[in-house]
Length: 337
Image 1 (cartoon, rainbow, N blue to C red):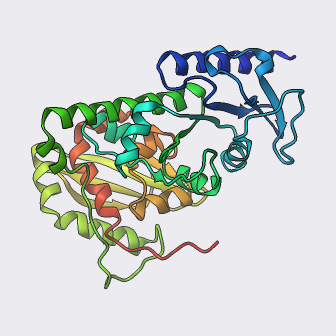
Image 2 (cartoon, one colour; image 1 turned 90 degrees about the horizontal axis):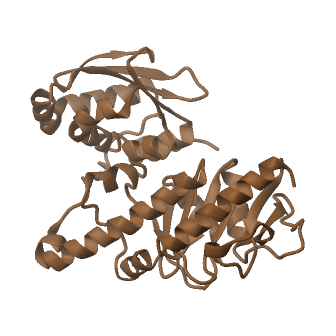
Image 3 (cartoon, rainbow, N blue to C red; image 1 turned 135 degrees about the vertical axis):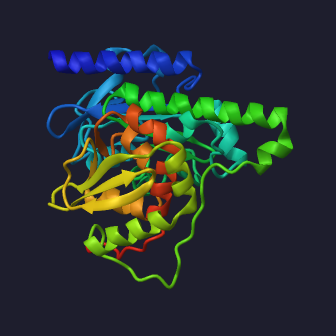
């Protein structure tokens, strides 16, 4: 066994122990995997205890064929892990059955967001109906992971991905804490809990024209909408929202710079020379403009990249949250391919 394999197995052993210690995985439930050598993954074997993993409980599998390269059989959730790694190279995958999360989503269809931390790091957690003991339709899970690194499987558990196991584990722990907070809030005051709204809900105007994403006309329409918005104008003055923020689409020269002055976009530039630059691939931007992905969550989960310190932008969290909510008010034409 080479050092890389030994280090990865030791990391998986530690993650399994942490999941067990936190009560997020009990008995023989849950499975872990990560990218290994070229064209191979490491995955926990079937029938193993995550809280007491041994090196021999972690096996190598060929990513293309799905064939196990070691003596023990891989987890029965291998199809889910294979599809995740084929769509998200170099990611780690955690699948487990946290009890509070399972209890919450057994009776709820969406996460009620009660704290800023939940909104910033988890956002709108996709919830997928599950009808069998195994993940019978992993394609739905992968589609949901395109917009959030964490997915809840109704009556089953969660799937989380991350650059490192700790990134994925942090999401699972944060969701368990969020549903615990929601449960406690409901105990304190059921009527107030039921009346809470977790996010701005906006609907697209059907008679709006559709724009090519990231075209000048598309961005100009956003600017006009922002500058007409009374809420951004009010909060922009209160918080002195005066900053240059650029957005850029990876793999192209398309970039725009918003020059904010007290909440109003005073000037629109055609470059990415700004103290803060948000960049992402076209598929991610499409999810943002369709309102399926929260920009702050996308940054904290690594789907979008921020040049500049997130902490400095956070003082304008309220008006920027409204700004990103307005993105989806401008229709875009579906991307070809």
